[in-house]
Image (cartoon, rainbow, N blue to C red):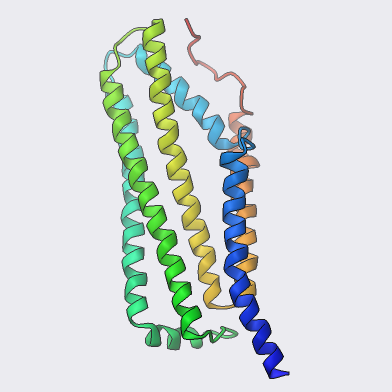
Length: 240
């Protein structure tokens, strides 16, 4: 009997990260690759970014527009700094595995994994937050490009300036997409912490994270307030 239980425990310890990856990659495919996310809050915010940049064209003084970009840059910078600090913390834990395992062992109902499984748990978290760091830093660079493009955009509304505003909106949209994916990594990184307690809890929290992200991007109260994708934005300038 103990051997059977041990075998089942080992199996679920191995299966848990695969379920985790299926949840993360599956949601990424659903929302970002299969074009099933076009009714999301992110798509609606793209329409507002476009409206903002169209308004930018008729402003001679663009200090307000640059300040908006600065706020976005500050937010991204905060999370990028947090990600690299988290990575450093987990690298330190990897070098002090025995002490860390002793602390986790004091948690009620916590698993006592092998050294290999323990190291894999730490490495998974390191990979997740390194991925988030690279996403945040690329988003940061793209928002910096948005500031430069806003400064370079000529004043007035004409076919050429409207086309340039559309280009800036695309760059801003890509920056926001990378920021959004990095935030997903933070959510899934928090889910991965549950693996230190129980593998079945890791699976449960991974599924729960997918539900939470889906609700926030497709069923949130904010999306209801802003209206569905495609609805006209009050005060937005007409093309032409």
